[in-house]
Image 1: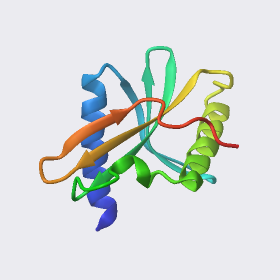
Image 2 (image 1 turned 45 degrees about the vertical axis):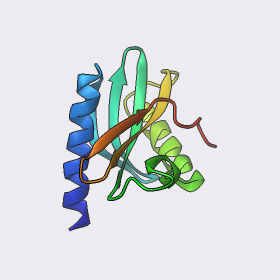
Image 3 (image 1 turned 120 degrees about the vertical axis):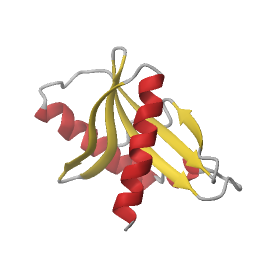
Length: 117
């Protein structure tokens, strides 16, 4: 099902992030606000990362798939995560990893969006 496919791409994205020096803290962080694909640490930043897979590398690409609503959800989840782990005040960043086409071309966008109230 979709969930399994998603997990495959999340692991691929995670491996890619690790190559970039990130430390993966958690896959699929779930809270009552929603869920975040990957929570990681990149230097001093706590990174909340959304993974987007697109079968075709056509117009738009993965980034457009992260709607304002989704950004708000991820922002809320980030807040929950920080409270749960007693990290409030930690520097956060929101990244998006796009995986496109049969070649599975990976694009990492750091700071793809700002925290949304």
